[in-house]
Image (cartoon, rainbow, N blue to C red):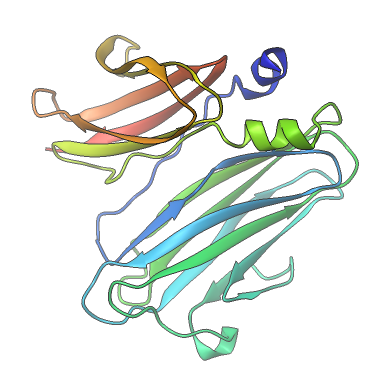
Length: 242
């Protein structure tokens, strides 16, 4: 099992979320999903209205870099065909605006064929109130014939989420999930790759966790945070703006 995880998860995933305006949050449960060839890869996302007024939210598929024979589609209250690149919470799309404080699920579906390959989809989310400010998220789907049902469940149970908020000043929260008990190391590095903080360095049970990172003593700039546990490694980028 560990060799399988090592083979398929030594993947560095950089994700930048632009949330200058606080109209909504757009938080994916996972940005990397594994499956057997021919399976449907599902990415679930929570969209929350952070304001005190109704918000009409739109979702745009800005990149659809998939192998031949693969396709992707969007679901936001209703599910749409693979040809639909943009949807919104309006009556045209069988939906309604988000009430103040409401969280509504969204999903991206990648339909694969019997080949072992990797596909990439990028989504942008925003509101009609401020359409030029968008949240951008990159998703990766991977298939391989050596992965069985149990392996898929385990592989998808390891994750390192994008910190929130991002950009941040001076504190941010990092969520991560551990599929099996193991020794977890979560570290922060500067742009030169120099370790500047060790947030987690201990044995953890299987489960989901959150850790706060305070960068009050650091200068503005780009930083990276990385998790290693049971041969699973993932790295993300965060931006400190003071």
